[in-house]
Image (cartoon, rainbow, N blue to C red; front, side, top):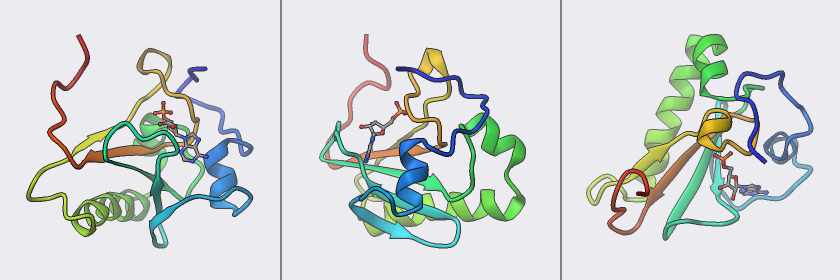
Amino acid sequence: MAVNGTGPYDPQNVFARILRGELPCKKVYEDEYALAFHDIAPKAPIHVLVIPKGPFVSFADFSSNGTEAEITGFTRAVGKVARDLKLEAPGYRLLSNVGVEAGQEVPHFHVHLFGGKALGAMLPG
Ligand code: AMP
């Protein structure tokens, strides 16, 4: 079910539980600011989620309330993951759903990183 992208933050959401080690993930990368792992239902040959470690509901929340260090650290982590996956030359797509109309399902800010094939139109239809 789609969620509101403006909070409040639910510490029981699935990505919070992954961050606390209560649920497993297929980890791709981790540092002080970010964790990256494979999406459980991939929509491309490479479909990785990158999440900040802090309790942010969505990009709306993160971009308003994240510290400079959190925003910089997270952004650099997304770029590093794409580089490490050798996606820079062929190309890749970043996407973040915010709120109901975008169909956001997990209320912890995340960026989808898609790659591994020609990704086609930006939006269906
Ligand atoms: P969104 O609609 O942008 O909130 O996307 C949420 C994404 O999280 C979906 O692509 C799901 O497949 C993915 N997802 C949900 N639970 C898990 C999980 N336990 N591990 C990895 N990915 C998950």
